[in-house]
Every structure is written in C-alpha cells, then in structure tokens.
Length: 595
Image 1 (spheres, rainbow, N blue to C red):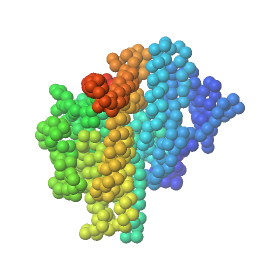
Image 2: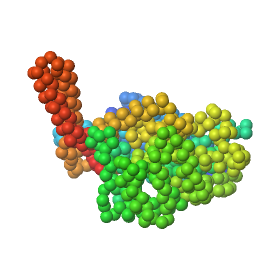
Image 3: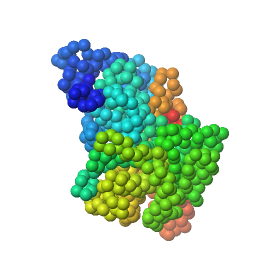
Image 4: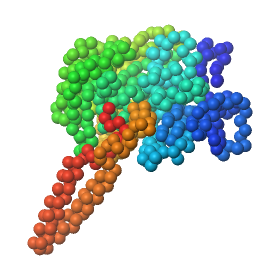
C-alpha cells in the first residue's frame, strides 16, 4: 500500500496502486503492483477464489503478461466468476490537486470452468449474461482517482472527521455514487483495499478562465446515483423507496487566488410512480400509476434531499399543457402536501419557445431571494470556512436532460458571478459574460455542453438536445439539424436497443442476481422482440415495395387500379397490426422489466 509519509503532508492519505501487472496462467490470474511485485494476489480460474501472494511468483509458465490500471469488481454467473479490470485510462484533470482518470477500456477476466456442467438452457442463459458483460465493458463516462475519493462534494469533505482520508478509498466514498459498488463485495471481503477502484459515472472536466491576469480553475463534476440506474424509457420516476431515475448531483468547483468554492445542483426524474413504455410511437404515452403509497414516495424522496442538502427548491420544467400536463398536475398536487419544499412550475417550452431563452431571467427573478439564501460553499487558502451552501435547487423536465441542462447552466453562471465577486475576481457590477474574453466564456459554456452530452449519452444513448443554447445562448440551424439527428437516434435506440442495455445495467448494479434457481431470462417474457422485429420489418418493407410498384402501374388499366387499392389496404393493415403490437416488437428488458 502506498501511503505518503506523515513528514511530507500534514495528514497521511490512502493511495491505490496506479499500475499493475496481470499474469495469465493456465490455472490462475496473478495481479500485482509493478513497483512491489510481492504484494499482489491470485485468482483461481476454476472457482474464482482469492489468495494473497506469499512470495515471488514464477513467471516462466505465464501465457501472457500485460499492464492493467485497477480492479473494478467481480461478478458470479452460472459458470463461474468474472473479474472486471481497467485496461486503459486517460488523465483528464485534477480534483483538489489529485489526478483524475477516465476509464477508456475495461475487460472481464473469466474464471468459468464450470460451463461444461451446465444444462443446455443454462448454457443459453450464460451466453446471454456474457453478452451483457460485453455491454458493461462499453459503459461510458467512468472516472476515478488513485489518491482521493471523488464522490464527495467539497462541502461534505470539509465536514468529514479528521483521519477519514487515511481510510481505503472505497470506504471514503458516498455509496450512492459508486457505479461499481455492487461488484466490490468480494474484493472487500478479501481485503485487497490497495487494488479496489471506486468508479464514478457521469462527467469530470476542468477549464481555466483568466480574470484580472490571474488564472481561475473551474471544475464541473457530475455524480450519477446508482439507486435507480437505467435507460431513458425503462427507468422513469421513482421506486417505492423514493429513489428517482437519472438522479445526478452536479458540483461546480471554483479555485481562484487560493479560495475554493463549490456550488451544488441536483436533477432527477419526477418522484412519482409513472411510466412511458416504448411502443413504436415517437412520443409514447405518459402514464401516472395510481398507488396508495404515492404521497409517501414523494415525502421519502424530499426528506432524503432535505437531510443531505438543506432547503430545497423543486423546479419543474415540464409543460403545463398537452402530453406532459397530466404528470405536471400530479406532481404539483403532491407538492402541495409538502409545505417545507418550495415548488416552482416553469413551463420551459411555453416561456422560452421561439428561441426566447432570455426568459430564463423570469425564472431567476421568481426564485432569486431563495437562491441567494441558499448560497454556495467557500473556504480560504488556510481552510477557514467563509460561507456554506444551505440548500439546493432540484430541477427536472421529463428526461432531466435537455431543458434541465439549459436551466442548470444558466443558474450556475449566476452563482459563478456571485462567487467571483465575493473573491474580488469581479467587481459588483461585472459578470463573467461581459468581463472575460470570448474564449474564456467559451470554456465555461463548453464545460456545460460536454456535461449535458455525457449525461444524455448514458441515459438516452445520444448527445443532449439544445446544446447550442448553452454554448451560444440561442438556437442555430446547425444545432437544429444536430438535434433532429439525435432525436431520430434516440427513437431507434429506445425502441430497439435499450432492452439489452437495461438488462446489462440491472445485472451489474445488483437488481438481478444470477442463480441456478432463477427462471431463465428467456422464460420471463412471453414474446421475443428479436424474433418479431425482423418479421415486422420484412412485412412492412415488402408491403411498401409492392404498393409502390402497383401504384406506378395504376393508370394502365382497371386491374392495375384494383391491385393498387388492395396493396395499399393490405399495407395499411400491416402497419396498423405492427403499431398495435408495438410493445411486443420493441426491445424489452428480460431480467427485471419495470422496477
């Protein structure tokens, strides 16, 4: 274990091994630090058991040796254990002086010699589970540090008891934001703390602004909660415990002239029981689920936020008319029962439509007093507390992506101005949008655009919409074209890909546990969407092709006209049949379905 000498720092802190060697043997894997090769451990390939190294390893029989950069967990399937390791990384900046890395690639090592003992059905199930592991290997937006935990915001770190940084990093972390928390158990039990990497999902990025000939560093770090992980259409709303889908804490950290400040915002799906099941429609119908525990679900959600963040402003950006009005009204009705929470409904599309995004100032004017009372966290170079953030704004639209990101970036810029004015980086009459060079303002905007894209990519499968509004303050032609392409991509992914992606998330997050006693995933759903989809596609394409041919010949004679009418009717009937069975044709999760 690497620990800085107490003589070199005021407080010794725990550090992970940053570079490891992986040795493959016929009967085991050996993982050890490059600098201290006698401190590693081995994993038996027959049963996945761990053993600490008790001396030098004979490397002559190793079939392969390569470098890895961390161990992220283990998972047991039907045939044995799989070990997740980081195979490449990229340094993306520093958090409070500690280097932060992005995972560029991961790999599962298989210890599954039990495959030959499985039944034919179990082999089919195991093949599907391993397909899901390959999906997990491609998970975007994972970050970590070898020297500090990055799941705790600056204000929480300030309040931690002395000595907490000497604990293993997985113990320092907020378990809500550790993406791989469910697959760390075996590593923790085997006490290999120096190798355990706690991964944070969403976005970490830094940028520099030049103010009064001084460099200030802005870090934007978003943390996705793991309690209700999932894809856009298969994880909506809240569960009975009050945990919401796409819940993300975003911290904007500013370092200027020795000062450190932090501004927190959160987003999350509307904390009701509701769904929006894909059925081939461009916008599937929103359905609020009537449940006797709904008031308690909402109460649990906001009680948790009050305990963690202080006073809450619940900012609802959904439409007050049209398709979204039902859920907007249901949310408003429940919020009337919570007098301790300020609820603000701001119809973003109606108020900011036709590129009137300057109307966000109307929203700010409405919440300005409470916004300023909530404030931000600020400490001096000596670590003395100057100000504390006493609450936060919880924003939501339907997806908590596009409208939410535009609004959060707007509020973040206002807070940044206030912080810089407090630090004397700006005068009381100046703000970042007028004081800084254009390229510096672009740095700030790019942080929020990239963050919005990353959040959206993980939840919906595409970049965020309305990114040009955050970047330029207005909608552009190129932005509209990009949004159109992303919208079509979302439609395809949500309807035909996200069932498998949801299964992969449920498997890695522990919503589904692999066991020989569980029914086969192929027996849990009555319909096989993978079988129905190609059949439906062939029928539609064939019908449209025949119809177009007959229509071209329709004017030749009466028989051609009759054939054209029959083909048009048949094709319309097939389209109606496909649409009526849209839910069965779309990709659906096999493991857990709706939770």
